Image (cartoon, rainbow, N blue to C red; front, side, top):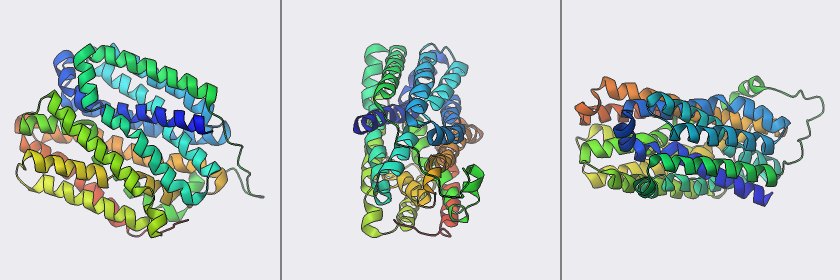
Length: 394
């Protein structure tokens, strides 16, 4: 089981890489394939949309056939196949198809690990273990920053995508060979198998879902896409500087994940940890939107703060997971993930038209201010609804 979990974490490193690498590739893709930032925002949004739409069938598959076959098959076909399509891309259409396939391939990876944690380990340890996977897996964010810029400069972006295709297939093959499924959960006497509608009928999770939908979007979108065009447009950053900025934000996201991990056991709350973290993110977005042209250092500091304090995904996941019965854990965690990834994808997809409507790159500061406001308002609303939730710490 430990070897299988290590491979799942390796697969999650790839998943995080794929979510974030467009920020660094943005200039070269625009130059080589004529794909503008707005189209890349749509492509990134399609990854998240495919990722989210796969969650419900993946949840049922985890509960019924286990994580080994579910994860290995999808990662090979979607991750490996999508990276191959990307390597052959000549324009925005192929890039969008590739990112959609990659979203399908990466969709089961994190939830397979969470399913095993929920089935094999103590409920009290779920938040810490969930944050550990996010923290280690976020090394993919780091690799998709300055290291990616170096690799692309050395061998080109197409060769880089072929390497990623090979890595995806290799990891999926190792998962098929090594990962072991936990034994099936025993259903309580008289209980039905249940469905996603059973979970959605639980009032305890209703106030959690709105924040789950919007909390991941700011850090994912800024780190994964908008940090690059923002730094290039406002500060004249080249590919190397963009790589450094996104590297710093990626490291902040890793540190945030590890910082949040043990807090629910130390503070005996999950709700108020998530409230505090997302309130800080909202404040940072408000500063980026309201203040005219902050300097490079303050702007990077605010982006890093969004990455650090926005790493509340495992806290929210542990909060919602605490209300699910054991025989429905697979469907429960994937339902939460569907809202998180679906919200991030929808908002990232919509951020492109928002940017274009505000004047695009030609409008400079005003267009990026519109993007920051676009992520701020839903976060504030989701946070307000989340205040009505019932706390639960195992």
